[in-house]
Image (cartoon, rainbow, N blue to C red; front, side):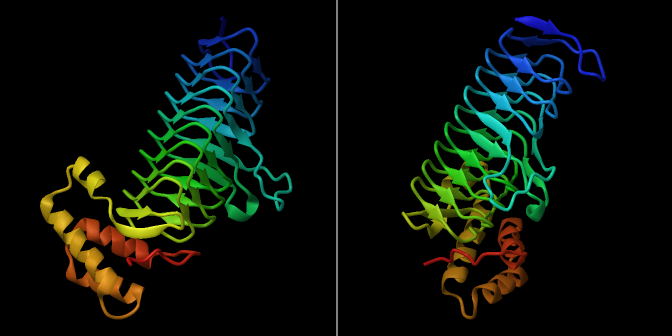
Length: 272
């Protein structure tokens, strides 16, 4: 390994394997470790203490937050897999303390989608999963092996997407929801929802996740009642949600109400 002490702006100390290629213009933070045969492009910004194992490609206008770790053969910041992409300048912003495992791919945004693919903090992307252009991901999200997030998806905080699952473009998945393995999700998923089956079906609430987070019994009871009303109440789905907002003072129920009444390009998975 060699010690690098230059990024064009400040003096830094990083450990870089002699076989790694760091293009001129790349900004490398203090304490970074870049392993054998990695390639870091000229517009890449690595914050302090970022680790690239071996054979990692980070390219494009990509920034990676402090303490993140990227494993072998991941390709981060390549251009979108979108035929409408015409070479415009877009970016990928990755937050702090993310773990990005082997063969993960993450693309930059597109002009038509706002130009930014964004990943929050403390997320885990397991081997072989894909994050497409203009996806927006919150914090503490887990995307399991070989799952794929299509363009423009939104995943709020604490979402889990099971292995070999697919999320259709423009779908929103609300906070705390869980998607079972080998599931295709084509419509929005309410916060704290539990989705499973080959063609995703809203089968209940993520009660295990709620209990692990220490949600109170009163709030879980309120969520169960809310789910029942959404499943069997009178009127259209949005009308039921409006009534929920008027009748419940649980902040967890209010998350569901706000999500349902929010702007979307898809319909909803509704309780069966």
